[in-house]
Image 1 (cartoon, rainbow, N blue to C red):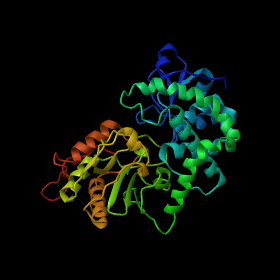
Image 2: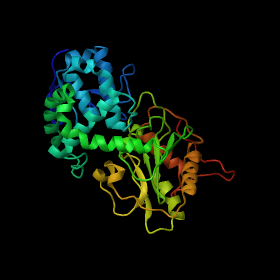
Image 3: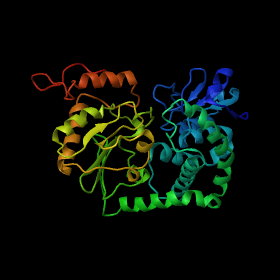
Image 4: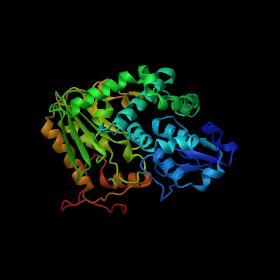
Length: 377
């Protein structure tokens, strides 16, 4: 495969032979799991890194004809896809490790049952730490959204140069990954201890995590692969409910129900809430919508940061009641819906408009059945 050159996303207009990784542009050949991006049916995967690795193994013709590669943002999955195209032999030699890293970086999923999984965690923690300390934390440049396209370029230049060295000798870079790695391992031990309880509702693809205190995302979401939604329950009636990023992209192996507007559920909870705070939720188009009691409105950077780093307020709603209201919300909405891997944004908008009335209640006919005909799944 001919050598590749990374170019800024803004320079794509100057070329006709650009591979676009983990994003989308109509001028490029796209290798991405983004919702709505063109798909390679036999090569599609849950992560963009997985798609790239599949393309390298299949000797995709465009890898021979396209010289340039780009992405419009920096994250673990996107970076590993870019790195794999620049160093394909090294990538295939570390294929499983890179796949594990991409799942951890994008979906926050892990099991920590092998040395390879611990190595993947160390390498992802190295990327996280250096990204935040040497450059800026994810979504810190989010307010002027277009700035990420420009500001991510120095990140790529640095990490593309350094990652191979870290991969070859991770212990030499211990000072950059050990703090976060140690926290994740500690939190993971709490999660798998008798202090915590994990309950998976397969019918709703809902994982309920009950643990004393908020933890690192890699612990809270670590065992969430079979789920699309995670309900976190902490001591003192503190709750959060979050759609996983897996429901923002087009996955290959995870048929899911469509995303529902959690603002509708927030309205139901606010009818029960007697505490000083009100329930609120992010919009359906957010990468990871969170439903939570709202004190100070969190920025995108704060919402992306780990639950242990943000305030989570006590509710007047008892645990059993909270679980029941949330479960009933999804059960009633999903009753007429089927699961599938690819939902378009127009489909999701239409489904939510047909499901919910303006006051947030499910639309029902006099016999108690939902009105309207939902888009075919």
